[in-house]
Image 1 (cartoon, rainbow, N blue to C red):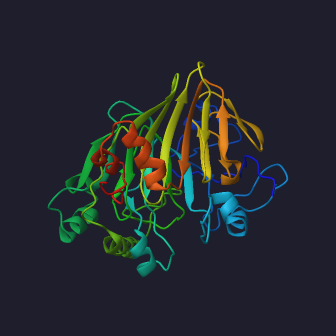
Image 2 (image 1 turned 135 degrees about the horizontal axis):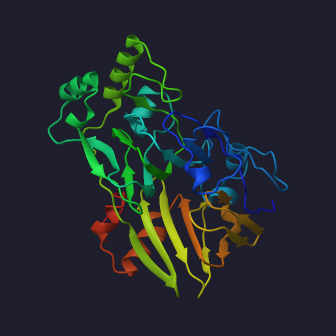
Length: 357
């Protein structure tokens, strides 16, 4: 297989909370008219799976590449039922519904799914005064939460956090959450679309749901809720790489890591890797050069770089996001410790599986 940077189809979700930020302010082309809430940059979710857009693999489903060529795509020793990462740009011009996603054990027990959905949000834009809901306040039990959900009084029980551009929130499965209005987010998560939400309307079109459906949703949400999860926003941990090149680890855990790399013009952004990278552009258009060829990447666009490529180079200025499935000790702990960061700070990125050495 002659691998190259893969440009994929990107499902678009036109939920009612969306706006026109990606098209009007970020210059993303090819979007439909009307509100655009989410673009699924790399997706292997059932019913919304990506296909390769161009090159020799054009038309090939991402699922097929992941299962037929697991090590070349994902890296040595990897096996799985689907590509493990889902990434999105989310335009929360309006507020998202209050909702949660099951964790792995709960998804297998109650949803008959192979995994749940832990996610992380990296804030790209936030209006003055923007906030997010993430986890319940201390002392809130199931009964108190149920009463508040029935009353739709979310601030009575949920933690409301200030939101600032550049920060990241790691959200374990089972955490009640919402963000918006006035927020643009890049999201990375496990490949899954399971969720339970607390609203009396459908997020797709705002239409009301019946009382019976709403009460059923609330019962399922309460069954999948993890009361102990109270995540906080983090600024990430930085590692100097070269003259004017900086790597910031935004979050890192057993399911994924997300990094933001910035480069000026003094030195190129050069990076070697052993696992698939989801590369999304948060800055000016760049050319991504790899051993398998070069691709132009516009703002708010993404490429999937197979592990077999092994390296990339971008001449600055550049501002890109890299999502991947990490070896936590090799890819995260070792470089951050070498840069002077402590184990507690590393664990706070979402990686409690990294123990003190």
